[in-house]
Length: 136
Image (cartoon, rainbow, N blue to C red; front, side, top):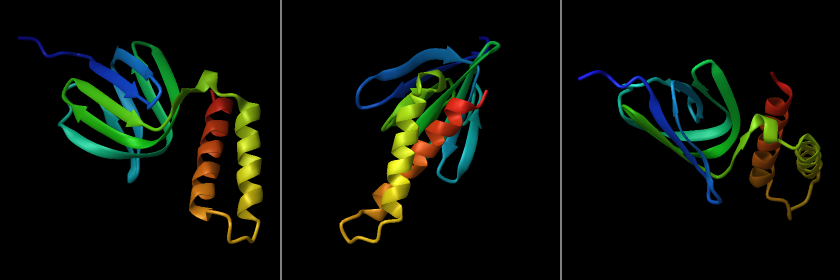
């Protein structure tokens, strides 16, 4: 029996199945650092952080902004459950910049009404989207 040479990737958000395809490799942003996955990988579970997820199929590479979640890695399948996932080419830079500006303004405000942790996370998401939308 021959060894399967691809991984089935599923990226699922609360709104949709963002990706469902066979891939050759994956690099994801774990909370303790990025990790890579190839076919035949040892099974594990990982917490995802805010960051860039990259997957490759043949010579094509796709990049996505992901916003925390979980990854289940199996020898021939990767399931990503995330709050949001957006392909780099779909990112609205103006919207991301506005979110970044709003979060920075709120962080500099000294008010008890502001949830600083939530605002810090919103800023991290916006910065990730901006970086991803401008990088090749």
